[in-house]
Image (cartoon, rainbow, N blue to C red; front, side, top):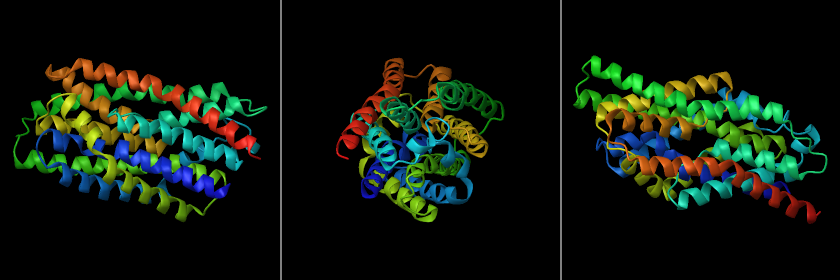
Length: 315
């Protein structure tokens, strides 16, 4: 069962990298500051740095996503819990990746924890803790990101930031900060399943998760890149800079506070804000993405529910 946990968590980390790694650098590709390959290389390096930094800075999030406090401790420590949650969330995220939808791994994990909590005999899922500690931050973060990106865009316009080499350099640095923040925020959530099942030591867990996230991003980022960089709204460097700064500030603050916000909701919400402000955003694409976000939690819940019963039936 420990090997199943390891494979399930690595699959989740791979799926997360495939769906999420490019989002931090989407503005670089979308505004023409860099090519796709250069943006992806920068995303891979900075995301891996953030994920490895989570060994020292991500303990609060790892504890939150272990399942303790949401389900009984005995269930949270069971290997079949970790395997079902990781595999259910991973399947949800990889399906969205293959269809080009940028969804939230945090949302998928939350749904998967709910699904196993409901499936387990005597699971006693704590709906109060789920709503206060998970659902509210997930719902609030996109609105906050839209408002923050609008404010940052106006600020840079007032400051008359030139759309030249300086703005492009600042955009590259801010995109790297977003990716670092995403690695720091997402790696603990994924590695939490390994620690809950006592499958590996923390240093090994974060190394495995970081490597799988990097590989997933390198292999499967293209469709997500096209959606987030090119289909939501056209971007110029200063607009990309505004989206990156607002995303980085929100995600880093949430990571420091141990709040499980979705880096996807924040980064894509920031680009939504730019598209709304400029009037160039494609509202049909935005609506389709919002629809995929609504389906993420129930999809993760159903898949994890089924997988948990399948694993239990083999014992």
